Length: 260
Image (cartoon, rainbow, N blue to C red):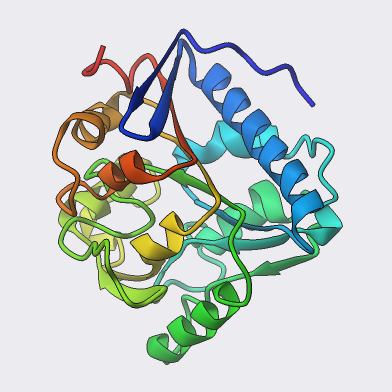
């Protein structure tokens, strides 16, 4: 396993541990080291560790670190992803399942990988299918990010619900969220970004034993500030991390600019 960089600054907000690094590379490497360590511990405590991963450019450094493999017995690990656009062709480069297959799932010998089907003709049935898979056993690890509007997965402020009874649901995407996809280079213009998606809900994500959340870059600074200093509520879904007993938020200097 690669050497874990030391954070420039560490502090707590509520139960959430926050670590600030000088660079994105250091941030991602530290988060990857901690995620691998969490899976290594889980493989001794669980019959088969279960982990959920986000798909976004903000995750690139974390995913690169995970590909190192650590001492994880990947053949025992069951992988999931946390959201997917509805209606894109299966070969579209923006499909989140493809993103994770290219950057993680296809690079390590996972025991199984469960993909959300964004091409389904029956989204409600797909939500129920995936929820049943998630409910089969506890989730050991979530590797997450924070959107520019404070979302986690596709739980945008208009649809986020901290007490959601569903584990997976169909959502309409907030305009700020869709614009972020343009800002990230996934789509050339707002009208090209899908309007609906399937997402794991906030309770599904927060049920994990451990959450490793990375939020690098200047475009995340406002959302990070809201998550750490604003009220805990659905207006900034990521604020819920402050109540999780075993979550760490990893920032770089740019994303932490408004809180330092």
